[in-house]
Length: 442
View 1: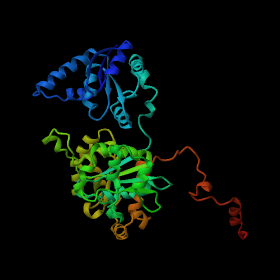
View 2: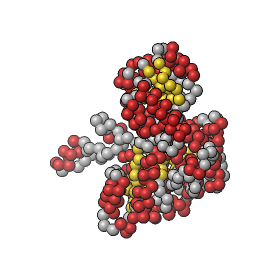
View 3: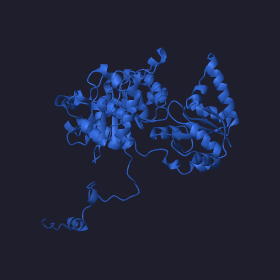
């Protein structure tokens, strides 16, 4: 058995594999396969290194790869497929597991796995190694939900706030996070103090390793008795360097353990101009948005249901897909109104998104300015001010269809215990009604 190891600081791993009889053909940094798959013809240095790696992959039977966003890409998978080389993924967190599953790899091993165990997996073959955890590759419920939309204020914050309120029904604990580095507005909309610690403090504590459930409870602001805890955003856009990629990723990982659902409101911009003009590892203006989108299990993409909003959405949707990869996307057409689209407004939006974006499933949220104004005036959510608003009911339907899985339809539902449905009349009442006899007094 011949293997190529692409792991940083792999001295102990290589020595352990060799002791178990695995011939290590070559060893590289974890990012080397991704660099080799994207090396240009005008880069002589990287191209020479790429040729060495390609020859090693062609000779080896397997590639032991440390998986993260920088090391595992679709081009790396295609490169190994062409060489006929199996990929054995090593992951350090849940994000790495999701990435390995999205690329169709076998069940990953923990990065701290002993070399002898990795050698057993190499000798066992891909089918035997992948069998135990294949059913756990896709989670049944999204724990982190990022709400994104293109430029032009399509209603991201409103959808994020109302979605958090609906997910909190039934006693669930929901975290509402404002990670918008351009125009944070959750605190302003809900009348909360934005001078408190908020999400920026959570990110600082995450970098120091002191962020846990107790600290998150102290930092967050409870939204009444709704079950929603709010991590407010930065109070000045100039504070955006506080929300770095690593900080946001670590803070959202802590939120997974703290809340049943975490709804993250992010900005619209996905540009990475800093990576083009400089190769330094400096701060990125849109790092918080990109990190939240990549950490999310579900992305709610909000489009304004008018010709301009749909056009903006379709132009930005391709960039969103390139950023998040295989993460599931649920599209919401917000502020639907016949006046902006004419006859069959829903059909026009649905056909346009299907034709130009390949988007088949769309959820619609109608425009309800009266309820929205009442909520803004009282600094409350629309679900609190107008629980029977068409907007509230539409968001509730979306949460039940796209976020919270439906209950098992095979199990019978007892209307008397659940309080749902209309109970049947007793046979005695039906007989008395048909015979004309008066019913006994209660």
